[in-house]
Length: 151
Image 1 (cartoon, rainbow, N blue to C red):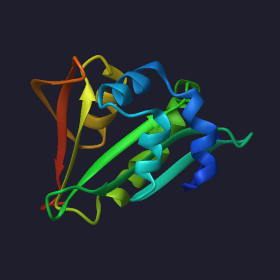
Image 2 (image 1 turned 60 degrees about the vertical axis):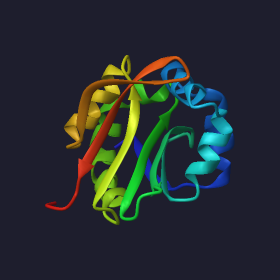
Image 3 (image 1 turned 180 degrees about the horizontal axis):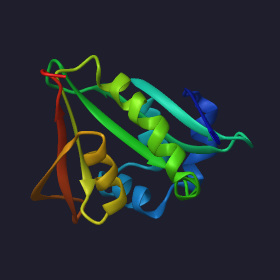
Image 4 (image 1 turned 135 degrees about the vertical axis):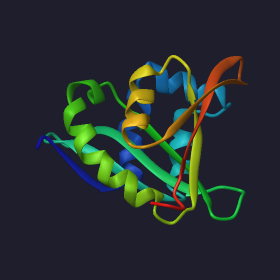
């Protein structure tokens, strides 16, 4: 295994914020926040970091309480290293996704319609990705969710 998953720390944000994938930059900016702001907001919840053998942050992901009781918002932001370690990311994050979803009856978020690889990953992790288009910051997004009542 080429990656290690750890609980996220503030230093992980410093490493990742300037190296986000273009699609992640587009998603973050569409919601009117900077990469640093988005990652700092994420630290309020359950957050994990995947790092390579050289201690480079590959991605950060997590969940946080939403405004609706019992539901959570899930997210992932990654560097270009996600592509290099795609198989390891798939293997390791699936179990972590179960963990970050566990406190909730339903988790959700929005994903840019052109983020095809992440949409496939979400479906592989058991999320439902809607076909209806929602606009944020002039960009097209799809709502995705996972109902956890029967999991």
